[in-house]
Amino acid sequence: MHTLTLLVMPIGAGWTSPAVGSHVYEHGASVNIEAYANVGAIFDHWDVTFIQSGVTIPTDSWFDTIPMTEDIQAIAYFNIINHYLTISTTPEGSGSVTPESGEYQSGSLVLLTAYPNVEWHFSHWDINGNIITGNPIQVLIQSGTQVVANFSVGTEFEPGSVHTAKATMTNPTNTGFDYEAYLYMGIDLAVVSASFFHLNADESKQAEFSVVMPATPGIYPVHLGIFSGGQNIALYKADEDVIIVAPAIFDPNIKYISFNYWTQGSIPSDFLINSRQTATVGPFATYISETYMLEVVLLKNGEIKASGFCQFYFQDSNASYTAINIDNFVLPSEPGEYDVQIRTYRGGQLTGIYPEGKLIVYPITEPSDLAFQNLVFSLPQYSGLIWHYLDVECDIVNTGNETITREVSLLLHYHDYTAKYGHWWRVVTGASYYNLGRVTLTLAPGASFHYHYAGTTVGRGESCIELRDDMGGISEYKCAGW
Image (cartoon, rainbow, N blue to C red; front, side):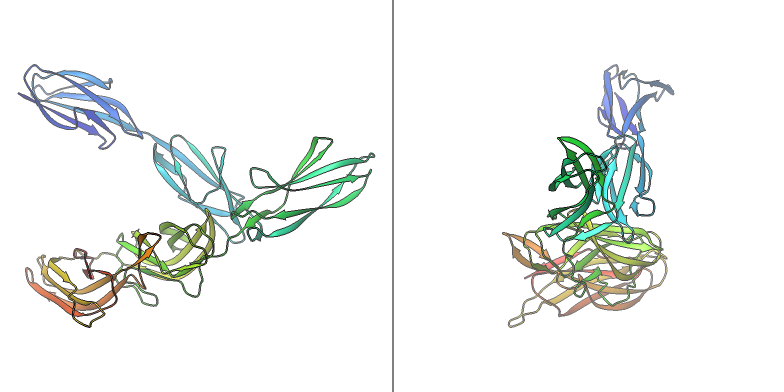
């Protein structure tokens, strides 16, 4: 019996038949091997090595037949296909785009986000000659890709509002003509109004166009087409675009943002680099049924270092909501102080940027060396008690080789459940985490401390807890409810 071992290089670039791993065959058996590339890679060659003989035979064919005369290792090599994504903005100085230009593996999905500068508005993307209006968008990289983010200046109007556009028309000829003028809005040149008039030789006249503004927020280039006798004479573009702006979904007087148990007004003290957090934003109100998106960004010197998105749909108009969570928000890898912003989008358009103070991200200076074992969490019920009675026990052990002093916090994550539209929505009420107290422990190597907390706390519904120390150690996450 002989062993055939199949491998793929680079790992994940493709797959083989038989599958990657070791397979046992009788002496003299003939085994067909095949290699298949995953998206973003291309097969290059096999290296087939006869182990006892020490001979390696390369082959460029994606399939081969191997005689099992001894143990054999066959490695399928693939080449990763990369394409260059070129990103630019126009006009110069009008805005920026994340990420920057660079190489991406074929088959990658790249999230592009356009950020207009002050007094500018995002208009549309030009991607290899195709016009796309959403923001942000995902781009599938299958070849070299040219992306241009177009920004514009313009006057803002409310959806559905009625206005009058005026244009002075002049007949420069020595003959009178009948004219038709059509006002277009949008990149698809949709007709929104028309005016019909006669101009004598060398006569000028002001034409008026009654316009009902589009219902969908966005940037609408404005053109004026002139016809006479059924012939297109000219097409003019207005100096400024029309910008349809939806009512803001945030009331700046009532919103807040919290990261885990960082509540408004407190100084964060234990947000470690690369740690995953939950950003909670709210409360806020909406005035139009629409798909909305929140983005929370962390900036340093004006450059975005971390961001997280949450997209959601409001079925009701004129409704207020408690909070929205952005889970798995990854803090930057560089310690320091970061500016926090909430950015709001409606219908794919950026509708507001709200500064929200600062967040301090701390380095991991040394391993935690604390283990949280045998965690028990319960919510005992007592007659007449409308609040939770919280009971937590855990063994905290120093697994390191030195005596250490650590500050340990017990955190409560409280949920309330509200029925909405026939299914359950989870709404976090208030800040998403509550710190139920901290204890400072000094433990020798191998020593343990039996932690026990018992007391009343907030609310109804489901509650979850975890223990953390100030060096990044964390217990399991346990939940309980009435």
